[in-house]
Length: 516
Ligand code: KIV
Ligand code: ZN
Image 1 (cartoon, rainbow, N blue to C red):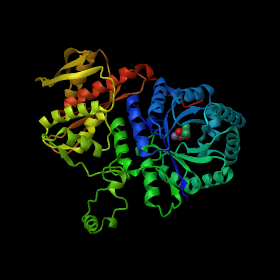
Image 2 (image 1 turned 180 degrees about the vertical axis):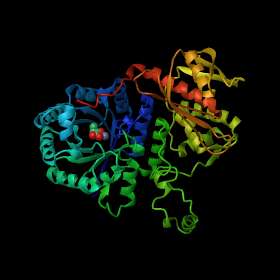
Image 3 (image 1 turned 30 degrees about the horizontal axis):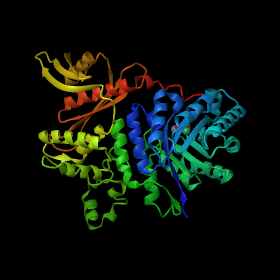
Image 4 (image 1 turned 135 degrees about the vertical axis):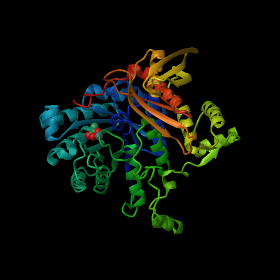
């Protein structure tokens, strides 16, 4: 029988720590459901004690995701562990993940604790977590720069206290693959079958994936990763790369298996990129837009003769159906639309289907050719239930002779329409100022991205904004799609505002929560 490699996804926790990727709870739920569909074994849904928003996200994900284990991170502190257990109450299968730093530099300067005090704290926390749930994971933060003798000492104590999984992070992305392999081999021989060994690698030197692979080859049976390699600084191990290495080089990983349905990789990558506004670089392995594009004539010739000449994986292996196919048009009916939704991998309620179909029909009036990505964008908006506190009714922009722009907008709240206008330096500035005047809010635009969803002069514009509504609090992401880029801009900004207002009391600055 094959030995299983567990895939532990931390897109919603370590991934969310990447700059500018703060997500709304509804968006996190959507990602969690997709991770479940992808076949992830453990979903680290957040850090319950870090903010009321994280707590609620873990609680809600625990209610809706039933075939993956749901996990919360916590420091080795009783109140964190209790918060994690409370947030996980409704999960079918739950895990508490507690950690403490074990490297000399972290213990001396960050924790200001002696090694024996660190062991004591770890043991107490694991034992407390174990009294609340069966499945406890313990991580030695900065393990790769820790003394191996000390690692053995603390891990033996952790096993004794009840830890089932022992995770060795390369927190600062420092070690080389050969070093990682050596550490994991020595610890694996030491731990034996007493616990599952896990690796968690950061990508500061571009080695996160290869270090994780060396981890597996030397005894790790759990890999921690994120979709698109999202994460703090240079990111974490990319889930899609590890999984496709295991699949493509099955010859070297004979006897190993995992639960990932690789056809869900591309939809997962797209969803995370759409929600966070962080797109993989075009040449990113597996999910980059050029990952399967063969430009050179020699390659194309070889591919036509036999795809295996230059292709080690098929686009369909990761769920790419066909790049941006022309799909439906003005005369397509509801049944064809419903069918297309299914092919694109969405499962929607009747209400969501009706709303999406209505938007599709409106789109058909202004755009002749509708592509897969257009449909995907509509569905993503219709299936993310951010409360519509404000909604855009009308946008009118004009430029005057002094080079100033004037935007007049109408926005609805509780069925009442409010209108106002503002002058600005350019159309975006005037639109956002006008929204601020109408809503009485003042957002600070931190990031603005616009892209065409498909080809053609009449392609739909997708705008993603990141807006800070309160100084020192994380910026909030907003999305808007429209044939008109300025309408998409207004919608994206209003979306960020709605997202902010719907979770205002749940957002806190997480800075500082990562230290003991
Ligand atoms: O990188 C790290 O050390 C972590 C731990 C908290 C698991 O993310
Ligand atoms: Zn990490």
